[in-house]
Length: 378
Image (tube, rainbow, N blue to C red; front, side):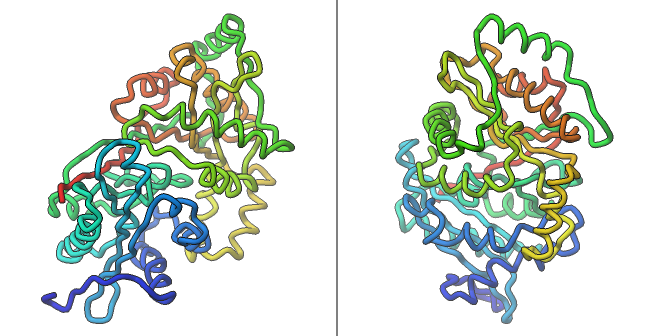
């Protein structure tokens, strides 16, 4: 290419190391960016370790100019997504670029070409790798640090995608509630409503049983895909993917922050909230495991993390609109407060999911960030 810019596949272990290293260099001066653990990124990208690759393939691409790495991207073909939705969408993810339109366009064009060769007709992203992972480009709320498993990007990425011909596919809203300064009482209406629902519906809540962790995971598997199947862009998680995710969460999960809703012994809903581990990750800019892991273990043991993220909250379709989601939110709010966690993030939620958005607003949560998924015909 002109000006010495070229895009090539990352094929060697050294190429992969450079692919992983780039954001640590690119965002080193951004005080809000939170460096992920390098070990976790390596595992995520591994075609042998990540069960995502049982139903998908990807190509990792590097953009170089004058011997310097100036950008990266992953081109992704997710067979399970297209089987679920009956379309031919290809994805891009792990997008990083210097502030240079030529670099960004070259990367996106290369990803589009790779997807076109696999019979896709739309390129969508960013999704690293799917909507079950980090996804969406931050378009509002740049002043706030990302929470656990949420992306962050420079503001100029919006311009790079716009000028490369991408348009909005869907916005993802992220809510915040409570306060890091101290306890905010549960809204009285929510507290009253929760008790009323419990009495009328005969629904009980309990904490995750960590002693029977695998059995609990099996029950969640049965509910998960049924609870989300109608959502735009939803991709069901395979049993291996859920097992893989559960194994990652188990060392840091707090049972009281994972409520299980039951009716006559049947699991009808659940929520998963975790302390925002990014509070600790942000203090260790290298992304290395040590000494970060010691800080993390100490912070969890001493309840020094004052933020939480609600990763998932789902209810079986036949029990929606009956207040089960309110019961789950109420449980997470009160149990988190007992651990001195007074601030929480909920999301993301699709912009056109009125039931979930209304429920959060009734809890006095407010939208404070917006992520966007983009499409471009190819």
